[in-house]
Length: 518
Image 1 (cartoon, rainbow, N blue to C red):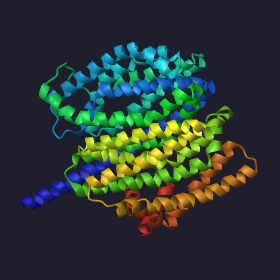
Image 2 (image 1 turned 30 degrees about the vertical axis):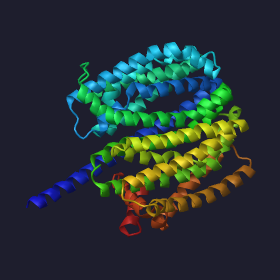
Image 3 (image 1 turned 90 degrees about the horizontal axis):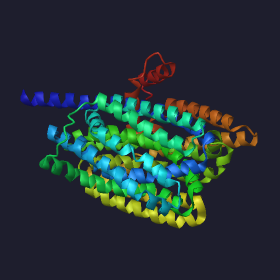
Image 4 (image 1 turned 90 degrees about the vertical axis):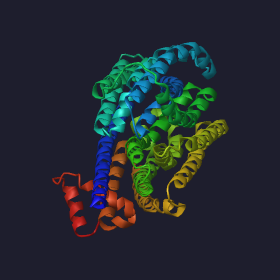
């Protein structure tokens, strides 16, 4: 009887965690989708109100902000999420440390701002850094609250806060300031406003003790994980910002503005998608970190989902690059097209390694992750420095090579943590590869015909999108197993259970399922 009860409890726990994870994915993807739409609208507006130099100047400032942000948190947030047993002393210590370091960073930035501006050879950067550094104490104030929401799997709130803060910060404050011709300060104001709104909501929604106290043992317990995580973040920062640093230092603010938009357009969908998976799967996998079979299943399904979504999108964005740039940024941004196409090739590499990061953090393998991130950062810096001799296109190629290598070594890390081999890993990607080839062939032919007919960019994008949807429906109707694979079919069948029955398309899909065609 005891064994039966334990098995029943385990089954209930599995179902409960699966349900919470799926619910989290739903809310986070919904929020990411809304935010992606907002970002596109805001980008369309701001690209026509501001100059590449404005974007480049803020991009240079954000390199400094994002690097400093690593030391303002010291991995405290992820340590709070990952800890098997979290006590009040951990929360108070984490809050005190994050607030203390966040406040100290303002003074450090004020002292170093002129030297940083001198390194970039951008004189206006000094004043921008003075103002934008105000975000640090705000982030320190809300860091523990955000981590607790993530630990408790309250993803509905996290998604809502992210969307609302971006809408007010960039969608409202940023656009109003740009219309008032504040130039670069529109972007600075938007960044600060977004941080203020996010901080206030997090503090209200996720209350916790704000007693300033550092308990030595709690500090040691948090920092054992935190230092390893921070070491990885430093390398990860160098990898993610090294290309911007090289472009800004050797090619100038205007080139950085152009390259930044190319990278943003490539990274926007994959970053939102990757962050959603990371925020949901990291705490979920942390809860089953001692159950290898469940970790393998979660990792494999995550990798399959990423490939099924990102690979086709990568192909479509590569083909439609000229129209996408013209439609979103306007004719003055044509220099973005080729770098954007090169970077689009690496979208899968840029997204899929996030699964390995989540797995490494969930199992505490942060130091093994850290040295791999160091190798990745080195390749980014060397590759982009060599590539900058051939302009932005060369920089993009250098980044692509580094992304591919990082994808490989992070996959190796995952396979060393869980009982999964390379054959299984690569076979997980095959259905997505077939699907991408089918979609890419049809869309390429349609775009070729439309371009010869001299249709406008918006017509080309809309028609290509409709063709892709029709093709998607057809492939799911007649060849679901071939183009989705075992994991994709499982996820799709699970997802459609959450879809309202009134939607005709999903009635059609469910009828297919009843006929054993799915």
